[in-house]
Length: 376
Image (cartoon, rainbow, N blue to C red; front, side):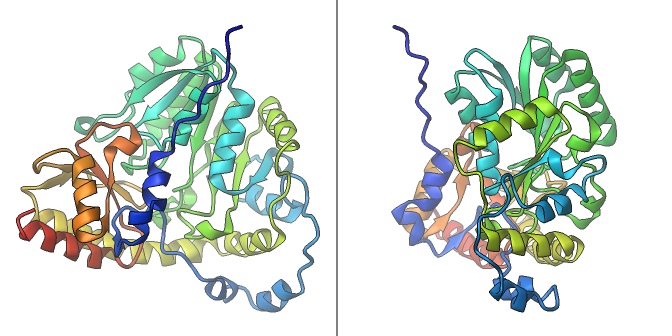
């Protein structure tokens, strides 16, 4: 009998950050999220919230997320109702649920590359035929629309994009978005768009989620990245497509159908004060972005980049000796610095991801400059 069970590959990026040596690092140069808020900071946005939190019942919450939270989410998404939302334990659970529910053995799945590994690996684990959609530095990391069209015409069941993109920070223009949706119209299938970096910079508050743009689009989002609340573990899936949402809800009944009441309570506060939180996080990110710009200008002989249009990540090319996997290993061993190499995004060995969402990046870059000056 031929087995259809596929081995789920190691999550190299997660292993890298959670490894024993990484835990001893003094600075993480590759964080993928905005500066985290404390519980006290978040509660301060809403008068009386601290008292309400202590009185909160720790009963089961609503299946697929409480009505209040799903209504808050849908209220930020034109033409999306609370019933079109499934709340998940962070965006990672949303990825796993979506791709397990929608992808079958032999399904053709198109994945934008570079990629956050689970967007690709979970579909491959399900037995999908993966077609990579490579985005190239010389094109500003833009999606090749002709190639996307050609790949989707080959019986694509699911296409997966990440906008704003991790790790490059690319955002398609309105005309490019129209072209993407026109391709979806002609070729069918579902389009999953990971939108966890929407809202950074704050001008993107006017961003229209893809789930609101087309009935076959599925938005994946959460509070970990642009909100700076990874510890809450709140994500969501949104779509007007009844089949897709129904498959996800049915699957979730067999796993964890509930998210914690305290996390949902705090998430409601965050969503209510989205503009202020995004503004706070961008002010921090803008300072770190300036420090990164200065660092790269100082070290033009070693690094180059295409500045990101959105999010808090930059994909920086290394021009020094050796590849970036070796560079990453040496930095961790010799300087106790964490720097994620492009291999963890399925993108060769020439780039690193530098995250500028947190306050301490300037200090980390100073240590990196010292290491480079020492002749490393």
